[in-house]
Length: 313
Image 1 (cartoon, rainbow, N blue to C red):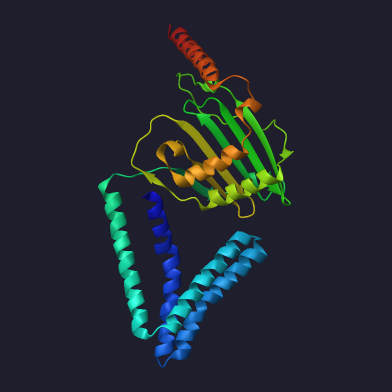
Image 2: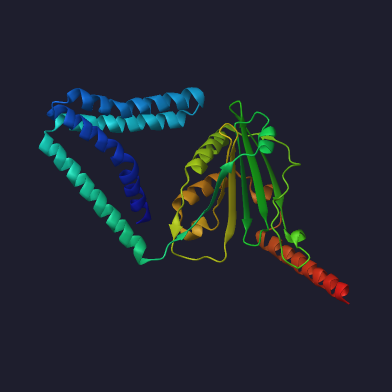
């Protein structure tokens, strides 16, 4: 059901609003005496789309956005052909049916989401890049950083990816336990696994394509919703620093597969495809890691409590 709603939402919010103006402008141009006025109005939108596509391609070297603009142009031209081909009454009938279908869809969607309490799934943070971060870009186009770990912030794998001059580089690291990050009150604080000492290496051509797809997916990801609360599971963090656009996006996608979040699961799959396996870093099984980390955490908590009691005496 969620996939059907997703496609219908895309049609209602992105495709139909592009087709309908083409139908209306060119239907009116054909059937009224103000032909030149409606023709000028009808050509403004495609002219703007072409301008933006050229701008994306020439100024920002973003082929994907340019192609997306051309696809919108095809949709608009399709609407213009419909408006120019049908008689006015038939055009109005098409518009009326489209609007009614849109309203029925929005009502249906409201009913589905109204019947159950929905919760936002992802943590999405968008903000501008700071000047300090731009200084360490080293002429890179962008940098992706991804972290996979369990619910207790152990068994952590971290990987960073950078693209520069059409070459994609990576570095990766592993942290078995996070117990060393316990504060004086016995609470564990999350600290990013250390990756700075790892060396950059060239990513294979096949994985480079996955990295570029991951970047696009992170940029386009939109909030998903669910009706279930999950208090345990696993942790997924991914961030994108776009040095050309000077933007920063961070996504928290915990428990995506448990909740069935399709968009987040697609990002998660690409992360798993790129990330070196656990066996690359450690020979212990996950259960062995969990046991060792649990013992270490309990020992540190006892030490913190002992130090606190000694200070109070």
